[in-house]
Amino acid sequence: VLFADGSKKTLGIMLPGEYEFGTAEKEIMEILAGELEVLLPGAKEWQQVRGGESFEVPAQARFSLRIASLTDYCCSYVK
Picture 1 (cartoon, one colour):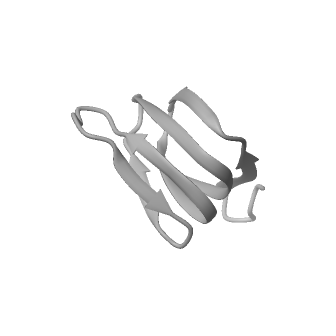
Picture 2: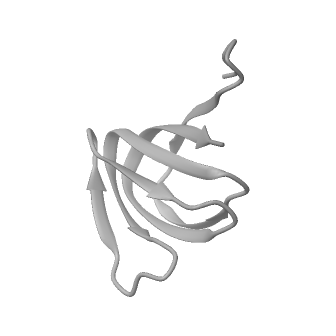
């Protein structure tokens, strides 16, 4: 979704499984429903995130997700 002020968000769902993503811009991932674990850049331990919680990923970084159940998210891109 593109907003009049130039900001951008993506909305979607993730199916159970393990994934790795890369970022171009800083991202704020809001978990709307579901449950996952995230391994953020430089972290040694997985962080559990549930519906109603969020996490941030810096620009130009890679992060890993382990999705436990169908998960709805909103990702905001921060310039």
